[in-house]
Amino acid sequence: MKLSKKVAIITGAATGIGQAMAVRFAQEGAAVVIDYVGKPGTADDSLAKIKAVGGRAIAVNADVSNPEQAANMITEAVKTFGGLDILVNNAGIEYKHPFLEFPIDQVQKIFAVNLLGPLVCAQAAARQMVKQGRGGRIINISSIHEDLPMQTNAPYCATKGGIRMLMRTIAVELAPYKITVNNIGPGAIFTPIDKDVESNPEMEKALMAEIPLARWGKPEEVAGLATYLASDEAGYVTGSTYFIDGGMLRQAGAL
Image (tube, one colour):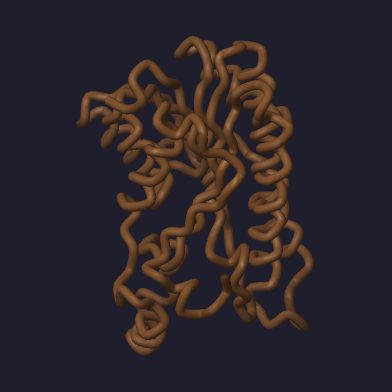
């Protein structure tokens, strides 16, 4: 198993890509801390799926943009499983409006969750990893929109561009501690965040025309890439974004 004896925190792991990563990490031998926000029981489905594959997991309710709650999440991981080896910053939100009409309260919330959150969690996790002295892995779930503009989605795209430079910068700063930092940039992955497109046949058809492989990606495919980046096999891999998009960026000419 690629992640045997590792301890991983995955933010926003109650559904979608986060849940797929949590289950895959557990299958690969990691003990998993599922971060969620909401009512008690929000993460029960993820916990049940991990239990079904024989894995170990706990759920922690934490707002990733709150430094105290992020620190508590690290504390719970260490208290329960004895340390921390992997952080996956997956939690994210998205609202769409024309730029001239974008409500500022929604802009602030997007920035808090999508950019401040990964920074706060990475800082808390890295402090624990440095204290342990055995290195670690930080993986951010970014997006093709760290490179590809998207109309009506300016704040979301801005946060993904920001997380690219956050990753590149801290990858250099944390390298002396054997902590690697990388981004995964998904394209169109079949998850609840894209329900507006998934439920509209015309929008879905237009989207598929932009993807050379002409299909949605699967959360499990993102989980496979995350497993590699979290493993010992990726010990010499740091400071880059790995796109998983069916060729969408290449067709768009964004790279």
